[in-house]
Image (cartoon, rainbow, N blue to C red; front, side, top):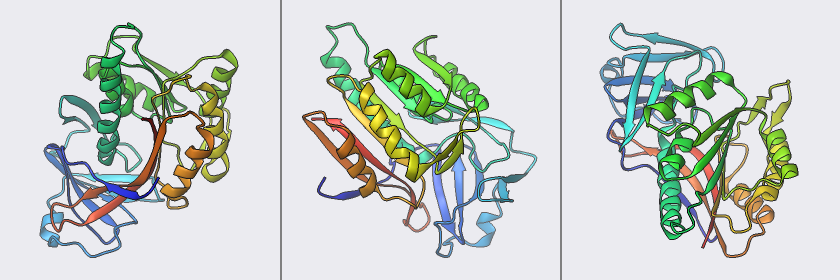
Length: 299
């Protein structure tokens, strides 16, 4: 790895970061504008207050992530957003997230390109690639991989988001069984897969900074991520295609993630890239940092 990149999605039509500042962001999801907190937006907004006041919903946080939404009557509780030919369900909850992370479109494009090119080269084998998606949330990456022809195992410990992910799969006409949805603890699942001898051609993980497993297990990113990544290398196929880590905490850097992948993935013929994900404002063209990533991919 020779450089750190900043990557931002450029193919969204139904999403825009309209403006940001004062630790908030003004976004458009389809026909609706919403305001959400973002502690990284340390600067002043570019648009006047009048434009922000046109938002259909605003999140009022009680804690860093939890709170309540103040909504206008015209905005529904649920609606859909499209990225190219993909459809995703959006809805409000007691959290600021509404079902999709728009900056992840950069990773979707990367995954789709890798998988499609590899599927074409393997077309005579009649054996789809196997992808494991850990901390998989509402399944956008699972849908992307499935639409590219892969078999996907989707793992998340939260039942409600797994149901949400199933709805996204149905919206995109994913055949039954192409994505296996599992409510499970990520580390325990990977350890069991290693004992069973199961292998995956690609692994995706988007772990939280802090969390709880199904039986109250405590997850702390800086402590548990290295253990999980090294456990995951046991279930990589002999000739894997990729390993993607994405996180949203300022406690780590993309350099640390890249070094971790370099230590754990001992497969020959691979390349590591790392950097920041960002969203680009429509108002002033500033980049809003939106996570870090590291990727290992076969040459």
